[in-house]
Length: 259
Ligand SMILES: Nc1nc2c(ncn2[C@@H]2O[C@H](COP(=O)(O)OP(=O)(O)OP(=O)(O)O)[C@@H](O)[C@H]2O)c(=O)[nH]1
Ligand SMILES: [Mg+2]
Image (cartoon, rainbow, N blue to C red; front, top):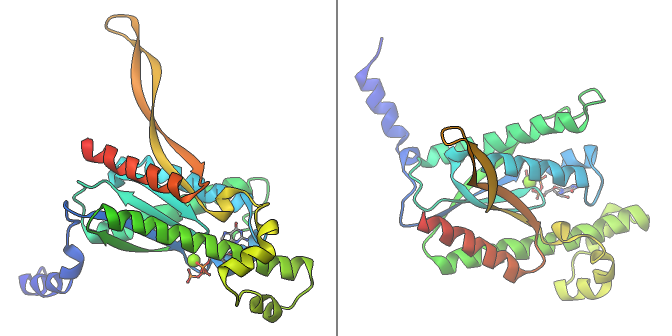
């Protein structure tokens, strides 16, 4: 039987989760693959794998087309994705935190099936993502957030290159390979930069997805004439440098303020 007393008691316990995103802040939802070190070791090439990258990109493009999430910009690196949410979006924190990672997980798991359509299901595990909300107060924090994530991407990818080169090409043990990473970024770049630079930008810096307008010729059945219609599509670009990432992220955010 429905009990108002119990309803009140348990709704009160949920109160932290019933907050709404505030319209005077900027929100980023960052998702990160859970246990992907093990998963990618089993099913993908080390250190980088085009199929893995394409799976994440496909899932990101697909979720950005879901109007309900109001994502205006995404930054992908390794197994993490930062989604910038439209600044006037009034959604409950708990919805954002639960629906975005579950949608990304579902799309990635779905798309993985097409990747191996001629084989039996080889990914004997779902692609699971955790999520957190990052609340930013102003543009400076927004810019610094992306500087921080890009720096993390660059440091991790350099380590990945060094570690897997030692294991796969130099017969080093995991312990020996790990020891090579205990050096400064500058020194590691000096020693291994020439190997690292051979990998494409998407693996060294990550890539970004944003909306771009384009025009399409349609047909107006009332006037029976061709008409030009404005559409938008998701564009994905590997990141060449920090300036390109920051400028594109800022532009995507400013565009959404105007709408
Ligand atoms: N083989 C392969 N592995 C990748 C690729 N991109 C990312 N990864 C791996 O994904 C992992 C991401 O690191 P983490 O998020 O710290 O590791 P995790 O195992 O997911 O740990 P949690 O996030 O704490 O659950 C690293 O082990 C990367 O090597 C890729 O293109 N190919
Ligand atoms: Mg992870």
